[in-house]
Image 1 (cartoon, rainbow, N blue to C red):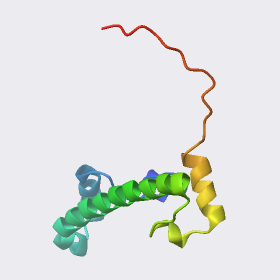
Image 2 (cartoon, rainbow, N blue to C red):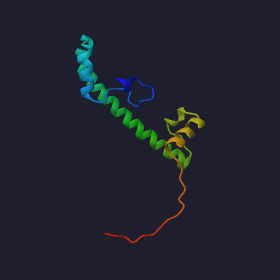
Image 3 (cartoon, one colour):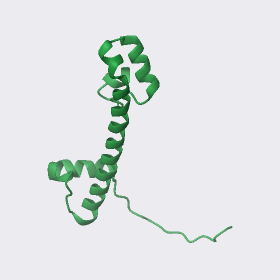
Image 4 (spheres, rainbow, N blue to C red):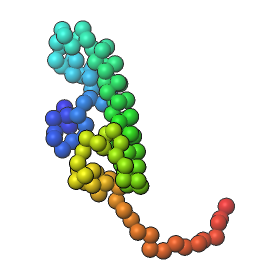
Length: 105
């Protein structure tokens, strides 16, 4: 639970069924008990959506770096915010040397 309430943690929802089962048992709420299967189903859906959005966001950032085009997700952000995403997650590197080595098999 510490991770779910910590602002610096990237974990904002129980990531496995065991954690949710412990919460269910600890809280022992009729509402939670009655809807527990739905909570499990929505947890899976939430995780799938977040992974999909992450891939799409990453793809849009790559497209922005290469072509300076904003996709649907990036349209919601200012140029300054987009540049921060790029600076933090897609650092530009310069290749200083290239060495040719024998191909060993």
